[in-house]
Image 1 (cartoon, rainbow, N blue to C red):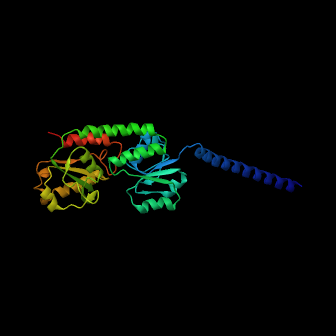
Image 2: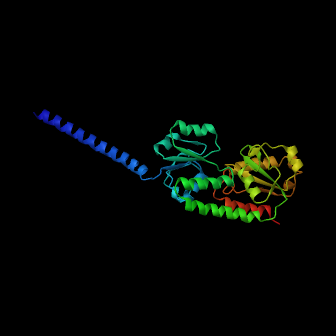
Image 3: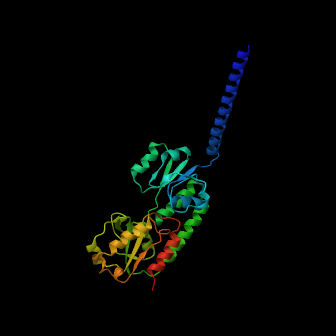
Length: 293
């Protein structure tokens, strides 16, 4: 009899525990469902530029890229989801996002990874200032932040209008894109090239089939730029050494920019691969460089 009573007690405890867990799980699922039904978004940003745009719009992010760059204060409690070029899909899926916002320049295979993992995603164009403006407009509409988006757009457009009234600068400029172990030339399809164009600068290699083209010394000597703007991708100290070693070669000694010490290393905080909300400050800095006396 005692044994039967003991077994009955164990069964009742087990059922009670199962019901408790079941209720807890149900409450969690109900909470997630209520959040979606109430319109609350779970947003993941996979690049620094996208994170900054969403912050400026007032959109809360639950996931952010792993980066050495400072992220907005609003993202301090967000989960790191890995590098911008190779985010961790398992971490992203664990956040159960309603949307992941990424840049569209990392190729079709990158986009397919999100589709294959059934992760809702949106890809934005941040290759130039026009793309930045379109991204701000699109995300403003997507998250019902059109008033804030319009404020940002007006600030950008006012800056562009002010610069368009300046007299064009005929001084020849070349953009040198440095990465550890290699250098390339930036065309006007690159973000920095686009900024030079907006400032009225004369990029001697404005044309090109892509944002960056291979260095051709014969063409560089022929163009003979007066200033060289150096943009650096990641590891700035290591990249700077690579560029300095390149410019120390005899083939560069006849170039006006090198002879006259007019090689300018751009601040990575303002001049990167992607257009971002520091574009206005970047245009001011670039204007001072291009129009210095």
